[in-house]
Length: 101
Length: 164
Length: 348
Image (cartoon, rainbow over all chains, first blue to last red; front, side):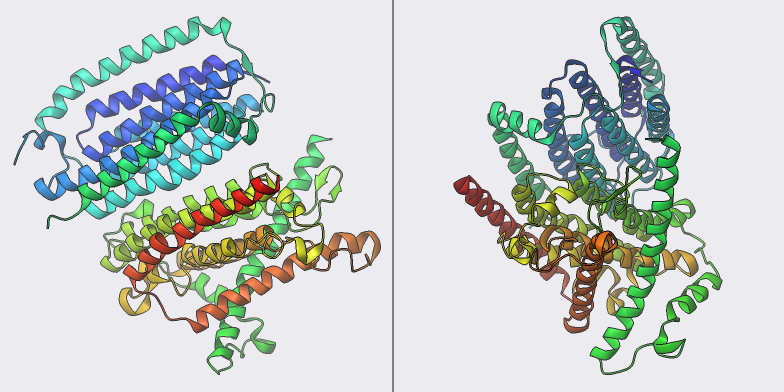
């Protein structure tokens, strides 16, 4: 039994689009951040699929770099979220629209 | 067998992602993202990327998402409320994402003939092939990411510190 | 190989291992109560059955028959899910642990449920997901003590996971594999002298692992998430009946898993400490069962060490715990990796 690699790519496209939709629609800053992580994961799936298609491990190594960037981004991003929450006492991105307090 | 495994975990992925989109409470969204990430790890296993699957669980589900739940717990984030912005985003967001999805799916399905078929256990990456490429050919990018992480640590510490 | 026999034998294996594992968990509780009792100069449980041997059954029956309370303002689905996550994550790890020599019967490995090539990473991954049990239980109970315990617990587990993972890299470097069987076989040559702890000079790594593992399993002296004197019972304050029993079982199952991993990585797994000095006895049956006996003996010694430490050391303060993890264990683990890889490069 086999599965065409195109299905994996379609799955990654579906996940990416859901991530885009969640990024645009959700108002909670943490959920928006989660949507970014979802999009990164969808792209990772596409990388692994292409690594399997061409039998080259470079695609998988790219995923490592994406993970490293995602980890760094999560650490900094969550620190920013905590700072915003301390300053404005809200997590809603509509209420965080001033450059200074 | 392979097809059944693929369908099961693909459906789990999509269901988790949709749940992330539809839930109003951030902790539910975070938990559904964990489900997505863990089932993606299984899909990586099906594609023969063993080490990557383990790292996906350890790094994403076990470290990054713990950080997210930790912050949600720390800030005691509640359900999000409807605002002015959410209506406009609703009107633009859903059609935009749908157009993007249609475009991508169209491209991938039209290239279907050029793509191979995946079989169970046909191509498994050994950990040492990964490491020899990572530490020999791609050593410079690897070292640069370590600098990136250092900067991220410094930034996070500087941001999260209380004002003196 | 016939697919049906494979499935049936695997299912049988899973059931047998799970039954033995859960019994071991129940009797580890009894062992702890007995030993701590002796350390504190009292008898420990001695009324139910001879020497109190039926005490785990009585405890189980009591917990099973208690009323199952859910607080009014708790987040119900997560409150129910959290103990399940905790218990499941501590039970899954046993699937990749090999507890005997590689002997196959009808093409099925008899002493390991699943022989994956990345066994060590599977254990690390599963235990890292186990944090959610603690985090979600504290958050969903809607109780300040639970929340504080959960925050402490997740911060502690994330911090010590780094030191734990880094301490194992020296062993992986020596064996050149993540496969637990390969790691054990790399220490099998000369009995005691080729174990990673003695012959591999990984004793620093072992002590880092030991301390990080105490913190990972929330055991004394790092049992801050459930510190009775400050947080009543920490993250499982609001739990009762079977849900509480699940947390309890998860903690002891984690203890056993940690002891198994320490045995496999540092103390030669199922191999005999005497190497080839001891002549093989008992024919085929002896060759199959003697390794299992060695494995169980080593794990038992580890559990006793665990309980001894609990009976001896007082609890750390929270800032001491964090400082110890980040400023002492982490640099030490990194230094161990550097020294080990340097030595390996020089030898090779």
